[in-house]
Image (cartoon, rainbow, N blue to C red; front, side):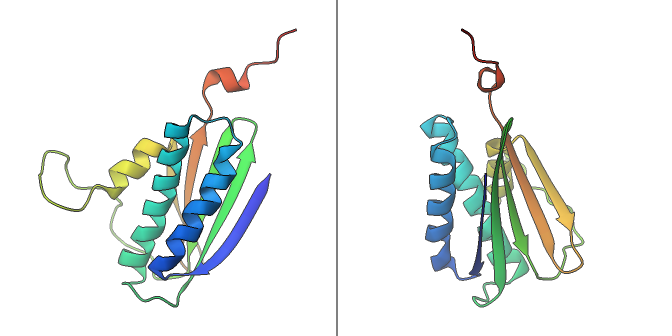
Length: 140
């Protein structure tokens, strides 16, 4: 099952993104806590693009592709801006100050986080694997 949306980089569109992701994972069988963590992780990835790639400019194109596969769910967040030369790392957790924890949240929400450079922009691929009991064959 797949679902894709395109939207402008305006922060007001993040509510739509959260609702799309929430509806998509609702039927996946993830616990409510796991599902909300996935929603927050996708939201944070979009927020990072708006802040760091598009520098808060609200008219740039973004896309979100949601995919369910046998072993989990995958989200592809795409921007069409300049690519970053710096490595994607969050600040150290022992440094107490506002900001900089988004990448830690994303990595906590997903089993795999990949940054895939495109001809224009970057695709962030966020994969959440289902727990082993989801993949076990049905018993009779």
